[in-house]
Image (cartoon, rainbow, N blue to C red; front, side, top):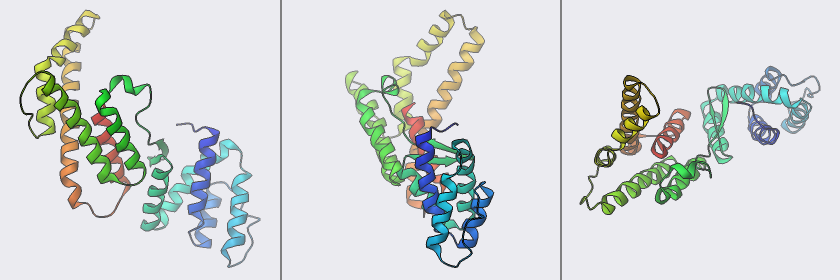
Length: 248
């Protein structure tokens, strides 16, 4: 995805700041692969003058060349050592980004456009989940996301006097959708819009399955938190995807 100039500037500062933690040989090699002119980097065994020269070389790149350079720098940092990867993941999330498959993805989830599709009682908790994820607190993020499910489903149970809701997220979600006839209503509306019956039924079934899987994933990742040691991009991405599925 194309980045704005301000995003390129911010990410450039973050990545170049982290690049300076590498050895002189490694950071010069990564910089060269990223298209930066390293010919003016002094041949000295002192980090400050080397770092200054590399920062200047990055600033001399055009905006388009900087966008090309950013993922190359990120990959170079990640491949250098595992502790550099963990630090980079933390830095990027603190600045509101994830690095996934060569792209920098904003962590932000709930904005004014999405609020119209999320129960008002859950918006604050979803926002809290994203804030916690951005600060590197995956456990707190999942806890907040689970709270959003609890809040929304419990409110529906109370409104319709259905008694005490089950503890399982998947059971709660299935019961709410089933008793309210959400899928049946969706199916009829699709048919009224002119969608072929077979296609309408397949679409509703796929959405039904996706909802069940999202609820179950959130439940499982919360249960699995105690088994997680350290942080990896896969875990951060899994946490984000679980929260996103919860809000959808």
